[in-house]
Image 1 (tube, rainbow, N blue to C red):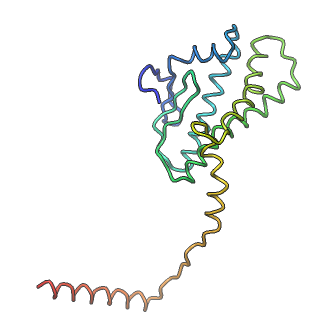
Image 2 (cartoon, rainbow, N blue to C red):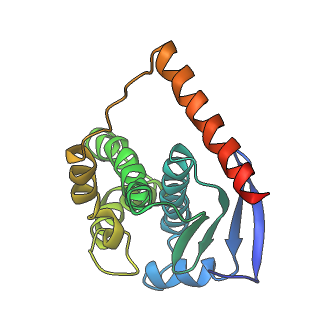
Image 3 (cartoon, one colour):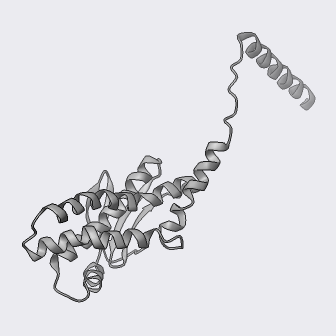
Length: 194
């Protein structure tokens, strides 16, 4: 998405993680122009987690991953384009990663007494903001993940209904006969060309 203004934070399983200069602006806007450092940190971490979810499923589908970018408007996992089925699976990766973070955050919010404002802001990102972003990402329109993600049930059903071609192994005699026939055809073709 962004070509310039990126700083490489590090690598995750060989994939460069890049941060864009617009992150502080996005965090400030999404933090409603308040001084909420816990929210800012959690927001960037949540976006990174979302993109790493895409990365994990892209890797699972054996797609080449070029980089992960986090910027002020969200993030992007830049990977090789796969089949529609592959792309639909990868589209679910971000929301699934967010769901995995949501469970411990909900437990922490219910069981722990969070006394610092920083901790409250951080847990708030992984609960309330997380749920909001999950819903937003699942809207079935471009550029949201839901545009591809919601195709998965139909694509999966189509793959399940397609019968696998029957595998029939040749006997030794059939293999020899097929090889003899191919050799005979090649010999006749060579004679015709003379």
